[in-house]
Length: 347
Image 1 (cartoon, rainbow, N blue to C red):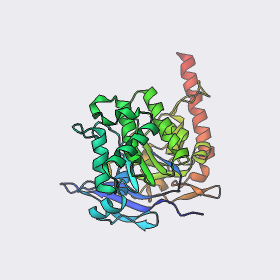
Image 2: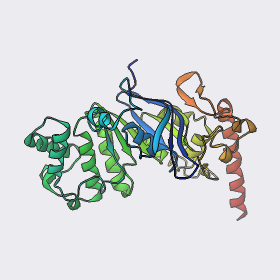
Image 3: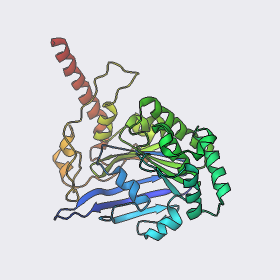
Image 4: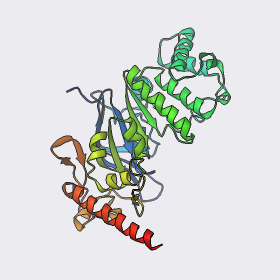
C-alpha cells in the first residue's frame, strides 16, 4: 500500500468572532486521499467543505484556525505551517486550486501570457519564453486555441475563463488539485465540458484531485472515492461504489434519494426536512439528528464514532445505527412512496 497523498485525522477548525460565540466549522473530520485518486467532498452549503480546502493550502481567514487534529500532505504535517512555508513548499507547486469564480481569479488588466510569466517568476526557474510556451501547451490541453494566450480575461467567455483557470492550476505540475465547485454559475452544457476536461487530466496527468460540490451526482459520476459532510462532521466515507450501492448514514441515503435517477423516472424523491445546526459550540452529538427520520435519544449522547461497514476498512459511516440502516431506510422509503401514491391517487 502506498501512503495517501493527503490525510485528515480528527481535524477540528473554528472561526473566532467578535462576540462570545465561535463558529466550529469542522469537527473531528477524518478522511484520506490516495495517490492518483479523484476524491469527492459533498454536502450542503455551510457544512465545512470549503473550510477544509482552505486549511489544506493555508487559506483560512485570519480568524480561522486548526484547533486539533493533523493534516498530513505526502507524509508531512502541514496544519501548523507558516505563511512562508505554504508559499515556498506547497501552494501551486504541490497543491493548486480551481476556485468557484474564475472572474475573480484572473487579473483583469494583465494578458494571460503575462500572468503566466509572473507565476513562473515567483515559483519556478522558467524564463519568459519557457513560461509562455508552457501556457501554450496547457491551453491545448484544456481545449483553448493556443493563439489566445495573449488575450485579456474579459475577452473570454465564462467557460473559457474556467478552462484557463484549469490551465493555470496545472502550470506548476502539482500533485493535488482542489476543485472547489468548479462548475458554479456555468450553464449545464458548459458544466459538462468543464467536468470532461477535468476527467481527461486523470488519464494524461499524474495528479490527484479533491472535488468539492453540493451535487452528489457529480461525485458519483466523476470520482473514485468520496466523503459526505453534514454540519461540520464527516457522515460517511468510502469508494464511490460503496457509498452509492451501500450507503449507511441517513444523510448519505436521503441525499442520494433526493436526486432524480433516469433509471427510475417514477421514483418518489426523498425530502430532507429542517436545517443544519448553528455551530456556535463544538457539537457533542450527531449534527444530523434533528433532521433524521431514524434518530433516537442515543444520537444526542455524543458525537458518533466511525463504524466500519461490512468489514471494509475503507468504507466508514459516523452513525450509531449504521448496521441497521439498510433495513430501516428501505422500509422508510417504501412507506413514503406508498403515502405519496395514495395522495396522488386521491387528487
